[in-house]
Amino acid sequence: MKRITAIIRPEKMEPLKDALFAANISGMTISQVQGCGAQHGWKEYYRGSEVLLNMVPKVKFEIVTDDALVDKLVDLIVTTARTGEVGDGKIFISPVEDAVRIRTGERGAAAL
Image (cartoon, rainbow, N blue to C red; front, side, top):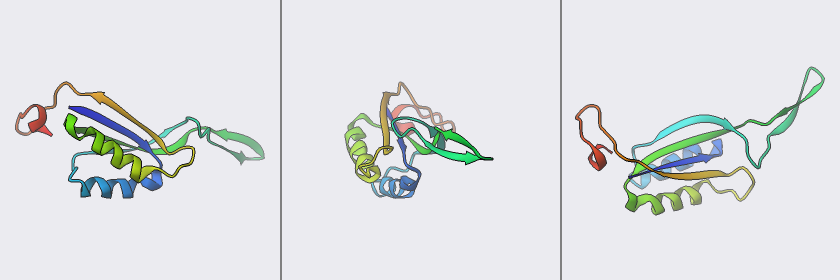
């Protein structure tokens, strides 16, 4: 099993969620997050003083899936979330040792 963590633009949340549902991926966690990277934020003025806001709002998707689906899901995320501009986000893939469904006690892929 693998965990796919995708950090994307907020305006891409609904299209990505719909694309994942269309691909029969129903188990996901979505969080509103803030971060900084190559986009570097922007400047605003507060009470006449310039303020650098370097934390940019993003959306984080977390999906745990079978190893065989990882490439398909990564391609789906890239295709759906890409604008071609700085700030499109990142995808991280990491191993998951085990999963447990609390209600039934099922473990591993059966718990997904």
